[in-house]
Length: 339
Image 1 (cartoon, rainbow, N blue to C red):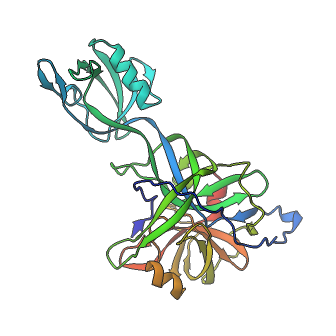
Image 2 (image 1 turned 120 degrees about the vertical axis):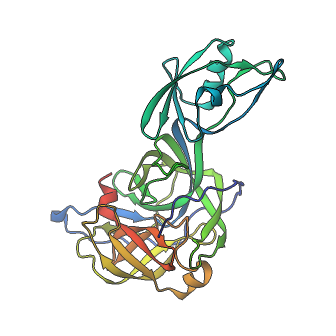
Image 3 (image 1 turned 45 degrees about the vertical axis):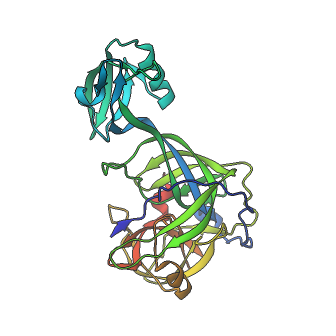
């Protein structure tokens, strides 16, 4: 079984048409029940998520007039550490961190580092790089990640969106924390099919001229934020979001495997377990031969694809079974809505 994640890839920019292609269908709701009405997602989205602090990818040498040295490694810095503070200053970006290090003029700096949920204090003395005359400590770092996933829903009342359906994992297999992020329209330009023993993946390109919104929260049941005021919802289908009455049987998902327009595909809900504490509330099986022919079943990048049954949104696709890519797990939509 494999969490679908957001597939991280080399970005290219394409400028193509806008999302659309579905007629508007408004579901009726009993006012007394105060049922939540949402727009059905299914469109692929490119996420750029700003991490908290600066994540260490690795350490490297600093070449000085006296030779080479590794200040960060020698002080105890490791790959997958996160630099949270330097001299008690909260680190917000790589640029800020580099400026603090350079302004040290070689004086020792106090680093507060997060490692596997533990805070560690280290003292590092920057060294002057001969080629640039700037002070450095010899680390390779990043302050954001990017990838693609699928938007599950947009709340018709307040414009809030939910996507992905599960946490994003860092290299150390810990859940990432973000400070903010941007969401863009994404065009799917290819598919690596899933086969038994290996998860497939969608290949996509950000449409940087078409922002979808802001990502504000990342947790164990997805990415959440606010949709852009410029995003057009008039071509999106509107339904009740409720898992009450969800049961084994026929259902469908909306997902995008080519271009920018979501399509409907038939699935079967094999099992319902609303009490599952890992948010694996549904076992699903892809039944649509067209989707199986194109992707092999469920692939990375499809996480967040909305699941509908009997005209209601009941959840989202989150995982694929490695031993059978036509099967996977889904999360209950009401769990996502609570976030």
